[in-house]
Amino acid sequence: MSRNIIPSYSLLSLFLMCVCLVLANAEVECTDVMTKLMPCQGFIMSGDSSPSVDCCSGAQTIDKQFTASDKPDREAICSCLKTAAQFPTINLEKAAMLPALCNLTTKISFDPNVDCSTV
Image (cartoon, rainbow, N blue to C red; front, side):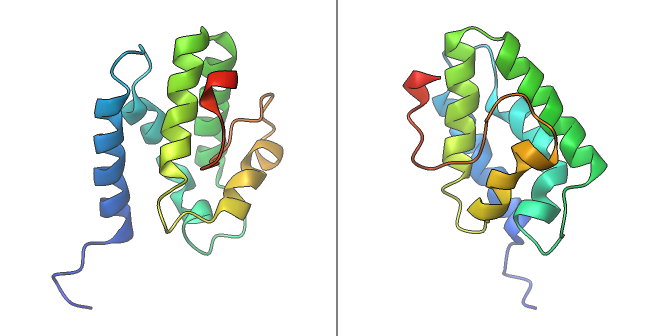
């Protein structure tokens, strides 16, 4: 492997930090959302067959935050996940399984086509 190739995880982190700048109006910060979901990378970006305990714990934290938040914060969480879903290494089918596999109460997911104004 060449030293000039940046690992996918580093690219994802850089991409998501840029997204955070766009979502400055809400109290929820995209970096916080993505930090909680970083343990899910092995499942949604690699070959892991199921999400880890840490992944589900982070997803459940976001799920609870989403449920307890006001509309601008729900939209911010949704927008963060929507933007992350556009990253080419995200396996959208696996990401869509997170709510069921992690026993989430809401249907938050990585979906590049979701209308975040309706959450």
